Amino acid sequence: MFAAFKIAWKFLKHSKIQTFVIILGIAVGVSVQIFIGLLSSGLENTILNKIIADSSQVTVYSHSGGIENWQDKKIDIIKGDSNVNHIAPVADCQAFIKLENANQPVQMRGFIPGDVSELYGMKYNIYEGKMYESAGQVIVGKDLKERLGLKLGDNIDIFTVSGKKLTLNVVGFFDLGASKINVTWVITDLTAVQQLIGFGDKVTSIEIGVKDIYNADLEAKAIEKVLSDENLKVQNWKDQNQFLASGMIGQKICTLIIQFFVLLAAVLSIISILGISVVQKYKQIGILKAMGIRDSSAGFIFFVQAFILGVLGTALGLFFTWIYIKGFNRYIVNSKGLPLVDIIVNYRFIELSCAIDIAASTFAAFFPALKSFRLNPVEVIKNG
Image 1 (cartoon, rainbow, N blue to C red):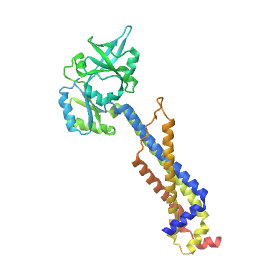
Image 2 (cartoon, rainbow, N blue to C red):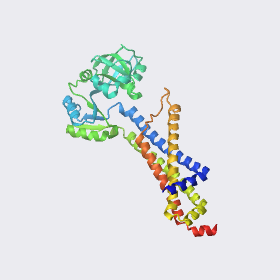
Image 3 (cartoon, rainbow, N blue to C red):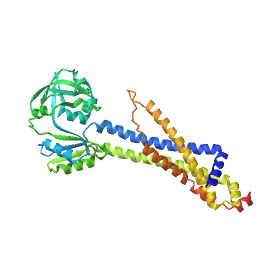
Image 4 (cartoon, one colour):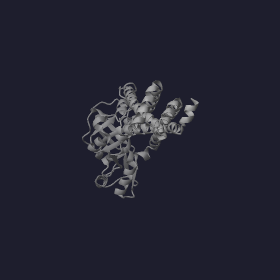
């Protein structure tokens, strides 16, 4: 084995330009493959964090219009499913704010302050003012604030379709990163909305945050089993955002296809170049066989060559990947100077990719090694 390694290394050193081209080709293929994988994963996480993470991933509704005994159901869910992070009972209703010349439609959302803070990350999303503390206080979305010209301390009059009125004091402004939410949501205490719509102690829904966003559909089934109530319907974010969920699956498939063909291109280049190398080294291989080297050892030389090329190419590819990530984070940024996609370096994915790339590079030597194995030294020496 050591002799095969020594001969393989000499062959590589003898054709330095050819060796460099192969290593560079592998490096580019490996770097593109790993970078696309990390970018795809980062894009997926960025989308989920912006759209899904700070919101309800599982929602419990009632077929009869309201959920009674929600306190007991909240306890049942917490006890029955350890993968639940946050639970927020909510009372919703459509309303409007009366202006001089028009009415501004809004969605009144009543939460217990601590629940909405945990589920929607209000600690980070309230950019001016503070969280409401009582039924007479309210927080308003960024876009609605700008549309109505609101300031901290202003009082707003909320009217329902049935004509009921509620006056609330603005104590804070939030930005949840979605214009549709920022212009419609008006968030106040749970009891205030319950009284406004005459709901008693019932809630319209129970919003739930889970530890693993990807398995929200499985968690929804588990919660449905825990509640065991035919009057309740449990939905998850995948049901409510089917276009987004299918788009992410499609994006994953496209990424895998691209990675496969990049790897295939690198493997084919190794096969072709090592195949040429066998032809170039016909005489040397023939002499080695005539001197007593076995056919298997002659073939093994090219496996060793491919392994060395794979290791060196993969190492250089990792360096290229580091450059890509640094360049992407520096130049592909938003208006705030932050990267558009938060690329998370997944070391397990990188290790697996490197192992696959080295293995693929090594086994790419199969056909060149077979050609070397079958080479007849008598014919080579006879024909010069």
